[in-house]
Length: 114
Length: 112
Image (cartoon, rainbow over all chains, first blue to last red; front, side, top):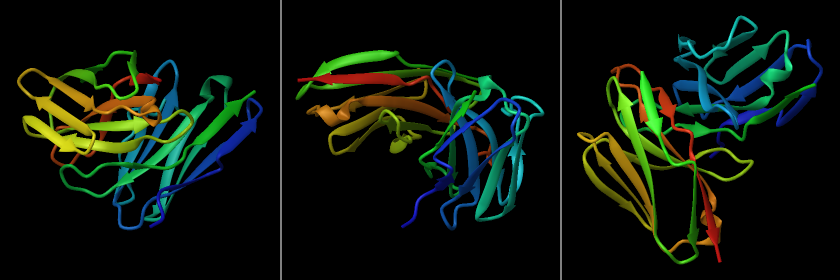
């Protein structure tokens, strides 16, 4: 079975550029999560969706970050304009509902903003 | 809010047993997960506890005490490949919620 698929795996870009990260969740999962991981702050939840609707975006750092889920099989996380402090590994995860259902993580996008 | 504490680093010897502790103070509780994360890779699910007691899965076991806000992950017969970070995560207490709050992770180094 295909897991969560993220692209790109690595992204290096200059400060001020727009960055778009993509995620395809596991088919049949109705929850999708975006996380950011850094050495200093660990794994932080940015936003999550249920049935394509954003439920909690309180972790989104600021207005430069936005996320969409136009359908059940695709989501994007966009940073515009990007800044060096946005450098991190960004993970997408999906899960089905129900108690005890684990979140399954994609391989992540390693983002470097120069 | 959620506050989750784990030791930052631990070292153990191949073949031994190690216990990784996790304490939490939360406004509610709806289950606790343990994940393993090798360097440069994604977290992978290890175990889930929602009731008090021990859950065993092969070489790995996880324990929960809700009254104490405490869990541990027990790894037996340690292997070199068990060197990784271990993340404790508490599930959102709201019925419709499915979000997790993660601890900072415990980096385990297994030595020969």
